[in-house]
Each structure stands twice: as C-alpha cells, then as structure tokens.
Image (cartoon, rainbow, N blue to C red; front, side, top):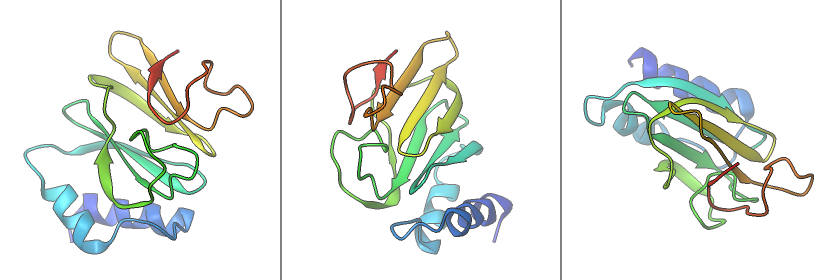
Length: 128
C-alpha cells in the first residue's frame, strides 16, 4: 500500500467516518491519473483532498452539504467539488468546507447556521 493510500485511510480512521473511503476507493483515487494528493483536511464527518491539478475532492456523510456537490447524499467515494479550481489550500470545518484558489478567491460551502460561510448559500461552493 503506497503512502497516499495509507494517509487517506488513516484520515478516515482518525475522524471515525461511518460513511468513508473504502480501501478499494482509496486505491482507485490514489492511482487515478498522474495526480498526487497535496493536502487532506478532516471535518466532523467529512474529508477533503487537494489534488496536484488544483482540484478538490470530498467524501463523508454530507449531512449539511459540506461536500460541495449540490446535494446531501452520503458518499463513500471521493467526489470532485464542482466550481472550484486552481486551489492552493483547503480546510474542512466541523460541517462546512473552505478552499482558496491561487488567485486568492475564497470559496465556502456546507452548514451556514452560524454565518460561517460568509454568504447565504450552503450546499454548493460560492465565492466569499
């Protein structure tokens, strides 16, 4: 098992996701294309991965839209967050997520009950 797969699996174990990345999904994700995972971040019940092409991928329970995939479906496999690209940094909050593009644009999605997104949207990424 390569280091990337081990790191992804450790992340799932650390945050105790019920709906998480399976070993076969981790293998496929880690082996996909020529990309590597540059960073991972764990929320309360979800996780984000930043790939070397600047894309952001997420998986988890998605109860509050923290995966940024325009619905509230639990996903065992990483799903690409649509609408953000050229990302340089990621952060998963308790039930919301953030990304910063290389041009400085900040994107936010997920639970906004405390105004943590800085906007009025929730399930889909929007610039802050």
